Amino acid sequence: MPAPNLNHLRLFGHLLCPFVERVRLVLSAQGLPYQDVQVNLEKRARWHYSMNGGFVPILETPEKGGKYGRRKAWILESRIIMDYLDREFSSMAQCGSLYDDDALNRSVQEMLMAKTDQLASVLYIVLMSRSQEPNSMAQMIKVLEYMNLELSRSSTDFFLSKETY
Image (tube, rainbow, N blue to C red; front, side, top):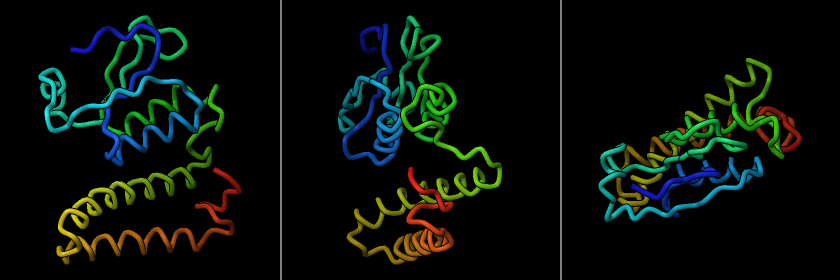
């Protein structure tokens, strides 16, 4: 088990993991300081494997609570971590909330993120098979076409006709 984390957020991940990168982007957009802990996915620590099978990302909140968490906790899965960061820190974040206040726009955002989840998974298969997996290629193209359609419905360069993100 890693040494106690007393005062700051700590993100356990791997540089090449797209799900960890999503969490890093949220932390950066919100201007939240954190400790980036790289995990060797080829030689996982026993505590890491027993916690969740050795997957990343993992966000640890500070043991003493304070500004960056109310108590020690381990949060797993990128979408859950992103939602936690948005709910807990959007009031002090540089970018404000990650999600739209409008319920319909929020639903569209959620659908786009679900499609992004599909894209990340299928992209890995396509890259590892060197584009030799036709079903995965077709799935990837379908997801990209959906995202392109949603973007074409926007009056700006961003989804949901936002001026900035």
